Length: 360
Image (cartoon, rainbow, N blue to C red; front, side, top):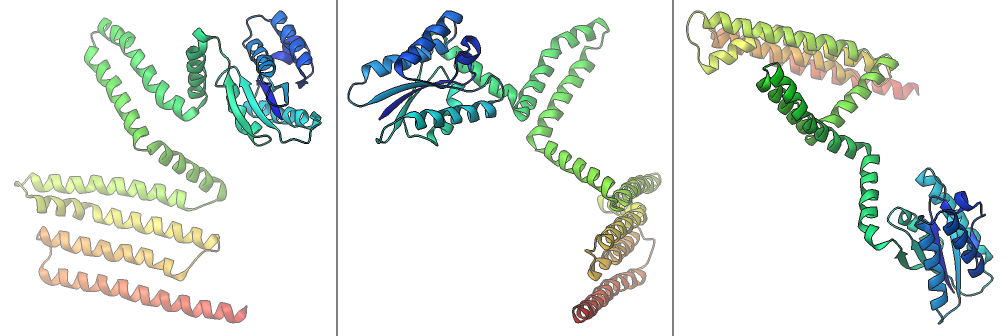
């Protein structure tokens, strides 16, 4: 049995005529079509219902039934759900032992979004789109634009750069009035370029993730959010101190690339080491408070100190502040510090883990 199914996703039929849906049977469907045409002759769903009647009248090689199902004038999800329920009602009303398959009649792309819902209930042979010929492309374009504007990600990607471009002319006119054309164009092009790079590199998702983590840390009592801020401040101070060290060297005589790097490291290494130790201690504290602490986590501050000592010794030697013997002592001490801390905490972890298992 073939079911000609006319779809009115936004329920123009029910809202404008007051008829109860679904409407099943040729006579009932024709009365519904006339009622809708009388209520609103310009409604495209009138064409859908009459097309369903037309198909019903011209298919004579098998048993045919025609029906009209409607959704709701609101959420697409609610509309699709209501169409599915009315299709179930129509199928239940068909008193036939034959397999039912359907031809779906719609008035355009928007109504066709319900096709998967119908297909989940009855096999679909074809979909007939009924649109006034001169308006078909316009209707499809309208629905495509509507989908684009409803998507927040696409909306932000397309509309924001477009809005900036449209602002160029009025802002340039204002800038010309105040004799600032170059500055305005530079600011606009720089802002647009920065935005496009930000979106193109996916930095917006990275920023969203960072904000969520920061919010979670604030409300779950994580120490790391404080220690990371302190560490960032120490890094900035260290960078400034490194630049100051380089400036003091350059005031005496020109310096090469190796000496430049050594001066930057020598001036910043104390502060960078303090930043690393601060951040690692905050992380260790959080691990302990959340019962995920491991003894090997205590290696982090010792590793930071060992690396800082190596960088200090090498940079000081390049700047001729220390001799080779001092550098050898620093490198040896840093290596021993890293090795001994690793062994000590590995032994502690294995011993305490064994005791915990025995106690359990």
